[in-house]
Length: 346
Image (cartoon, rainbow, N blue to C red):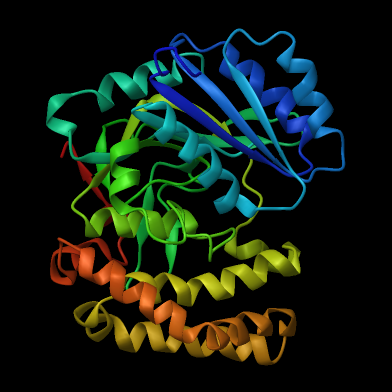
C-alpha cells in the first residue's frame, strides 16, 4: 500500500485453524458493493491448511490482500492490534474488525459507511450492523438475531442485545448502544488511536474474550459513542455463550474469568464500584467459588491477576487519568433492562 492512496477501510481478520470459515468469509468480502478497502489477515499459527486457503485466494483477490503469518498464537487482541497498526501506518480512516466465522451481505460496508460518514456522528467511534446467527460449518444464514450491540448489567456482566430473538423488526431503527461486538465491528481509526494504551488498541492482557467490551468502555470514557445500523446485515456463528460454558474450552473459560475482573480493573472508577458493589460482589463470589470447585482449570486466572497486580493497577491509573467522561455519566448504561440498553434514534 506504500505510495498509493490509503484504502478507506482496512479489513482486519484473525484466524487460528479456520480454513473452512475463510472459504466462506472472503467471497462475501469480495462481493461488497463498496470497493475501497484492503484486507490484512493475521494467521495465528494455524495447522489446518488456513494459510494454504489464503494463498489460493491471494491469486484471485479483487482487492489488496496481505496475509501475515505468525509462528505463535497472538490471540484475538494481538492479531487485530497488528492489523490496526497497519491501518494507522497506511492512513486508513476506518478499520473493520472481523471474526473468521462471519459472512456479510453484499451492501454491508456500503450501508454502514453511509451512516458512519454523517457529520452528526463524528464522535461515534464504533459501528455495527444487524448481526444474525449463521448456522453450522457452512455458515448458513438464519433469521435469529446474534447482536445489535453490547449491553452492560449492574452485576458486572455484559450481553449481546437481541441475542437468540427471531428478527421480527423490533431492532430495525438505528440506535446508540454502549458498544459493539468484536465479531463484526467498524472502528474509526482516530478513535482507536485516542484510546490506545501501552498494551494495545485492544488490550493484549485480555488475549481473547471480553476485549471488545473493554475497548467499548475505554471509548466511552474518552467521549466516543457507538451505533447500530440495522440496514447493514451480516451473519455470525456464535460459539461461546454463557449457557454453553461447560462446552467451551478450558482456555476460553480461563480467559473469561480473568477478563471479568480485568474489565473492571481497567475501567470501573470509585463511583461505579460504589453503585454496583453489592450486585457485582455477589456475582464475584459465584465465579471464585466455581474456580475453587467445579472449574478448577480457571483457577490460574486468579493467580495471574494476583501476580500482575502492580502492573495492572499502574495501567488502571493511566486509563483513569485519560478519561473525559465520569462514572456517573456512564452508569445509566449499566441496566438490567435489555430495552434500556439502546437509545433509538439518538
